[in-house]
Image (cartoon, rainbow, N blue to C red; front, side, top):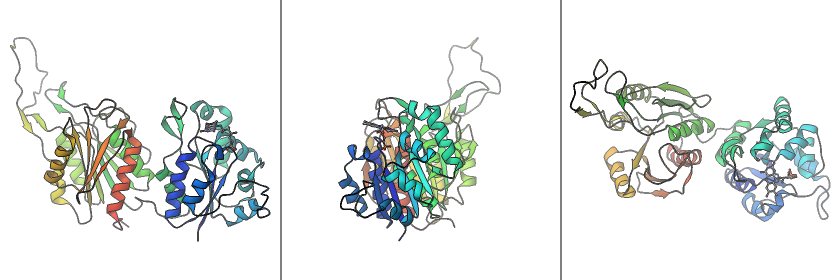
Length: 400
Ligand SMILES: Cc1cc2nc3c(=O)[nH]c(=O)nc-3n(C[C@H](O)[C@H](O)[C@H](O)COP(=O)(O)O)c2cc1C
């Protein structure tokens, strides 16, 4: 049985480690948790004992315990994970200090090591921490995260521990195993489209692209090959993702339909215009001499409808519904009309959620009638919840 020695150091994100350990244990790994003294002040060892199904190791010199536990742990590990990794444990690792059970085990092991740093942004930015991380990377230690976002100390910035599915994915990769989306080719659309009236004006919408980019970024982290078809946005393409920029609904349609063939998942997070001007003026429309201006709009192509018609067996279609009020009834109707497998519906009129926000609150609807109402959460976290839902439908459909 593959053994994961799982170190928990004294960061507030220790509560997230519970979820990581739960997921690893669920996959059948033998997870041996080692907690630092400070970690035990944040989460009780009994919680880790319950989720791992194993005793939790705490002290170098254990009164009842086995002799030289640091050596036995170091030897039995196929991989050692430290999550959260405090600035302190990273410093100790970088300098070879061994003054408690976790740091001594880390010095004694020859197994690959993965750390998930988590700390206040100033602690993370400090040259000492940066140098320690650089040293550890040079020595072959694997680092996952940290991410940017709200921190437990009330500040915003880099320092949040990577989300549990991302840590699990990194562990699997280190063990040479496949993650939840590995082997899958995923197409994600993001952002709003622009429908030109003349060479300088367009009809657009308030979509920022953040939800679609979060989906593309997290799908990549979960092991997928990702194509991102994006409307105009200031956002940087996530690392390792193939990005195709488009402007109009028609361009979006063309790029999506020409690329969806080999994809096991198509997630249409873009806010595609429903209407486009029937005529586009070749020259800038002049104000002078006009009493007013009437623009005739015609419907744009129904991309989701076309995707449904071309859907290959096993392909999972994910639709998004941005509504303003009456969320669930409208979402259920859209689910029927569009024939998608998963529909993510959110109320964009809710303050602090939806368009241009870093947060979103959504309901995930499944074709079989299941509905998952989620709390307000960062878009990255919502993206991970969506992939979790999608992975449950994919089963063994990976493109090998
Ligand atoms: C409530 C609380 C939360 C803390 N969170 C973090 C954290 O997220 N990251 C970090 O590096 N240190 C954090 N610290 C400071 C560490 O606990 C402290 O540096 C400690 O010496 C770490 O010891 P350890 O690495 O042996 O667990 C926190 C301290 C307290 C009191």
